[in-house]
Image 1 (tube, rainbow, N blue to C red):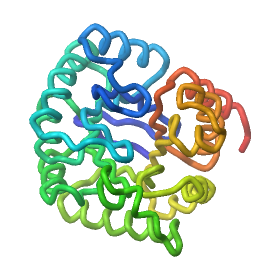
Image 2: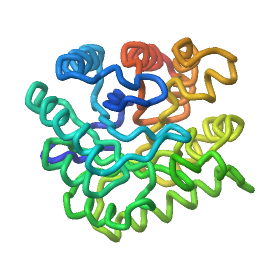
Image 3: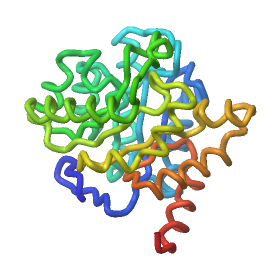
Length: 274
């Protein structure tokens, strides 16, 4: 299973690591940490040295209840940093975490390779057409509503089947818009409560039926720290446990704050016959 990224191929037969780089002041774990060029470059270098395959840069906090910001502010946060990373680390793959087509377009032309859309095209009617025109790989995630109201939209009859249907429909729409390289993401934490998140993780293998690479984003999320009754800063061990589960259940890409520990999981699992 290969993902075509510009003129390169990313082999997904082995799990790949997407490192989270939030250049926001209010992200739930690392908000405000990477607010200068040197801090950004040092963190990206650290991620790469630890084994990251993709740097996922986001300028809009999508935590539940996060404040909405303008396109102009989002662009200001991400474009200069994408150009900086591309210049200093020309070989690393970069994804842009945005649901706005204008941000996706400008980011791609500034050096980003992959569009990571939490809304699956539902918050910007131009997104799918834009990605198709760019020829970029597209991460199609499930979410209801938006970051401001998604926590109120957790009423499902059969959450796994409903998300499968959503992603299947999204794949067809993406293909109709000329998107060929698609990654699916069940959207842990987005319009799901804690119990529903664990149900999705337990049923992760069911998403293999769609025959597209699966991305899992559970790093340090509330399903971990609230279940364990700890703070988010203490959630590394729990994150590593659930990353291991996700890998064993077939995740192709894992999006994480903690690259070193995830790489250790991948190496150890690779030695097992399971």
